[in-house]
Every structure is written in structure tokens, then in C-alpha cells.
Image: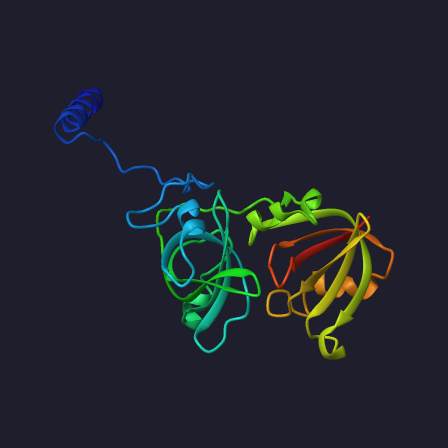
Length: 242
């Protein structure tokens, strides 16, 4: 009798498969990782964003890599996709939503393309979450050889690493520990100004604390976002002494 019931159940299941096209609930799977470059309708590719005129409206989709501190219903976000980086300056955001802007989160940003002291940014931005299950965390690319080269600007706002650079000087903004740290590095007899931005990496972070133990002449690897302030002014996210 049990055998007959089992056979009957198999036949019913097979008939259901023919009629409905499915036999059970789909098994949940993790969302895909990595950026496939596919944009929603009306969203610019990175190339189109680069080509857009200053002060023009722009709409992009990219993945959160880091954020500065939320305040006054605004947040500044470092974004990247497989083709390039974006900097959304003081984007409108509730405190509740700011907590959801964790690295890897995909969002759609609408605003105006602007520039300040050479830094290209999205201004007066608003955003919405893109719930397609995809995430993307950028790997820092080696930009060491681009120091002093015009080609560095082509990689603005991307996460990069600078290997084997020498600490030339370290100082605090307003001579106040806890404020921004100004870091002068030397590479191939030329110097460059980088920054530990307190709203990105506060005094409580490991990277901020690490600079208390560094001194002139130390050789380090520095990771950060290629920010621009009248020249490269990388916002440092990690440092490792050689």
C-alpha cells in the first residue's frame, strides 16, 4: 500500500511539473558578486559620465566603497564600478538610510556633475537603493608608477595603492591631534600631499592611529581613494610600514 501511495505521489508530482513548470520552491542563493557593467535604463555608463559637461545632470549606478560621517541629513560617499570611481558630495540621506550604505551596496545616484579644486564630484545628489542582489568591492590597483603623470587623473576617485613611498612629513590640521592628518610622501624625488580625512577615518580607526608611530624616512605602502585638491590628495584608508 505504501509503495502504491509513493508511486501515486510521483505521478502527481510529474503531472504538476508538466502543468506548472515547477515542482518545488526555488532554493535561495546568494546574490552575485562583481560588477557586470549592466546599467538600468536611463543610467550613464562611466564613459558617458566622464564625457558629461560640468554642471549637467547625471545619473549613475555604482557600489558604495566607503562613506564619510553622516550629518544634517547628508552623507558623502565614495563609489566605484568596474570602470571607474565616483565621489558623491553631501548626498541627501536620512540617518536610517546612512546605516545601510555599507561597502558593496549598489545605489543609483542622481545629481549634477561638478568640480572643486580639480576634484570631480556629484553635487546636490539624491539616491535610491538598487535591490538586484549584486555587490562589488573594488580591489586597490597599483597606481605607484602614475605618480607625477597626467594619466593619474584618469583614475580619479578609484581605490589605489602606492607602494614603497617614503614619508617626508606628517602634521595635523590646526596642529590638533584628532583633526585631519596631512601626509607628505616622496617618490622618485618628487613629493605629493595625501590626507587622512577625519570624517572618513576618524581618530579611533587603525589607520589614523598608525601615523602616530610613523616618522620621516619611513617607507610605506599607502592605500586610499584618489581624491584631488589642486593635485593628487589621496584620502588614505590603510598604511603599512615596509
